Image (cartoon, rainbow, N blue to C red):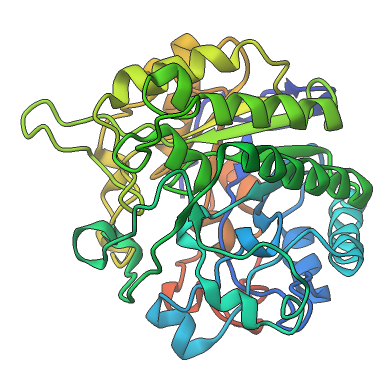
Length: 404
């Protein structure tokens, strides 16, 4: 079989922060719901999963790791999780920190690098987390909170996430309470440093809390965190500044998901949990330009073409859609990672033409633990099984074969 990629740029070395990558293929962050149900800490199987996908000088980005009970979704709003079980991980207890330390050690043992993606889910998190034994009686702030008291509506807002349950009306965070939320982020960042992560990534995308401040379809505040684009970006910038102070220059990344509108229909190409902005192009331009003020390791941008989460691999045509967020790469002065709907061929093209410096793969990387080498050698890829994306156990998690 001829090699898929004749050029070499996906395998050119590249510097991110203080670290030298040996290739430009990144493991994208993906929710896998394999944490220990009792502790919300990673298990030995989680460490195996990440170590399988580690390679010398290769960058992995973790699943979303939640910064506090208030930030943690139970995901029982999804049928797949209700039926098959599965819990997500946190980073606020010593046991969770110890669990993630085993993950980073396993990745480092194989010469890889790993970034800790920190998340507060905002209104997507539901009050049920308060019933968890780890949280019950702790007195910790609980969900749901958001920029404003604006509830998610299953009809029209679930997109391809297949969320089908009623959602709680979130409480609008008080102005003087936002500092407390940022403090939760910084404590999680300290825990990530203690756990041995090479980078920390702020998940500011996909309709979660930071995006709920950015988007005026949700944010109806009248204080300094609402109204103008400058005000709506304030929470993002203050959180980034706090994370950089904890982790240091060149160790913090940010993920954004700009949602440009189709000029013909006027509708966004993709939505995430109903997070819509009437001024999306100008808003994300302001956010990206503003991030240039910080010594970031990287900016990750989701291409708005990763819908169709129920589409089978053979029918997935996302890679045929053009790159709509490359405009932000022209505004950002640092390293830029593209994610969403890439194939080995389209990833090569995106790097060759300068649209992105690095390319993150999700579904293909979970199904192919040795994805960089398969691409380098032009080998066929394993077919992913989406019925095993969420839940517990090794099936569809650590049992995908490597190349022969």
